[in-house]
Length: 259
Image 1: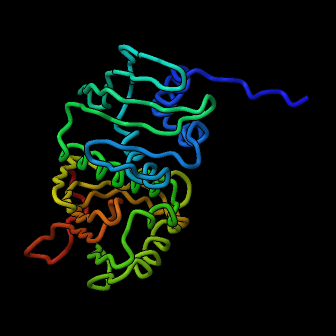
Image 2: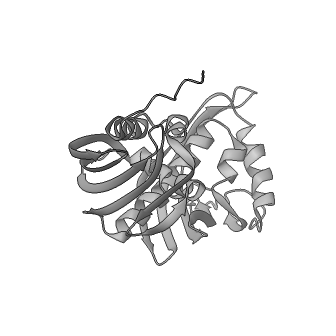
């Protein structure tokens, strides 16, 4: 005789859903969602599971803690109000509606929150930039290039004057990342982001420290500017510009400067 699948309450599925965000565990989140999962919010109109992961999951890096204030459950449906604490200590509140099938979550509706649309867009852009940092530290060229548009234009520290495609930039990035051995330290400082109307602008001071196979130590800062566009619901880097100040008298780059 076939045994019926165990039924999991909506409240328990919701609790697991938020724990997956706290742990930054996309596999755990994916296991909680049905294949035909959909998501709606003031900024999203019934988007698919794939679009949800592309648009919403990058924001998980900015969230530290979710605290459920109240949960009203009836059958396989529930309304939940929660407070979220961001990594920078700021907080916001949302109310969401969850529809489940007794095993997984089928749909989520976000009704309101303190974020303005521009704040949500900025968080999504920050998620893309955070992913570039993780990819560089891991020396993962494929993950890094996943953040760039195919027609990206980049002005780098090394020749040529510009890289006119993702393929050109991928070769450059692969050569650069493979030129280090051991631990590669990489960080951004003073990151500033402005996002509006499907376009975003970001600038920062970037720092890398690592060792070459010949034992040479690299420890340098440079200035970086990024332009991003939102294409089919996903933010991608379409322009990059890196530069070093130089001494007007000697014509040499001032690679030893620090913020």
